[in-house]
Amino acid sequence: VTQSEVRRLFFALWPDPALRDRLADLQQRIAPGVGRGVDSENLPITLLFLGATPIDRLYCIEDGLAAAAVPAFSMRLDQLGYWRTPQALWAGSRLTPPPLSALVHHLREVAVHCGCKIERDPLKPTLHSGARFAKRRAIYPPWRRFPGR
Image 1 (cartoon, one colour):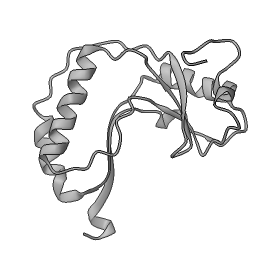
Image 2 (spheres, one colour):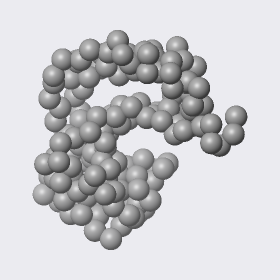
Image 3 (spheres, rainbow, N blue to C red):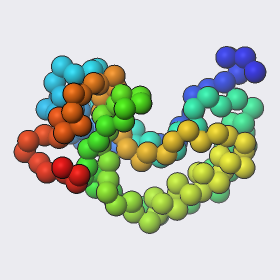
Image 4 (cartoon, rainbow, N blue to C red):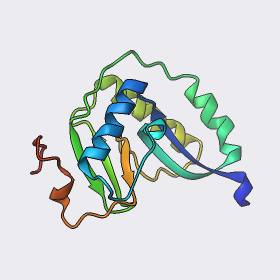
């Protein structure tokens, strides 16, 4: 398989422009000048990360996704965290709505059926990439308390 026959794939929800703007504002208040902020147009809520996937699996994935039916739901982004690898700050939800859990379960089944390797399934939009923090605690804004603090 050549590089041109492979794509880095992930399943994601795309927040509306108002939420993306709020997330972009949050990343500036939390860690101004730390790492490189993610452009507000590129703040998806990643559901499942497949990573490098051969293009020939796309047809199988598309067929599996055609069967997905998810009712409308709401989700509250109420926590922040940090992944050491890939050195990224994230925002996420402590509670996953049942329809979203069902969707992620379906996505996992499709990916496994199609022979994809699942790298991670964070359910979190990444705010900063390449950010380095001396202490985990440094990522939490002083005006808000989050779990684990």
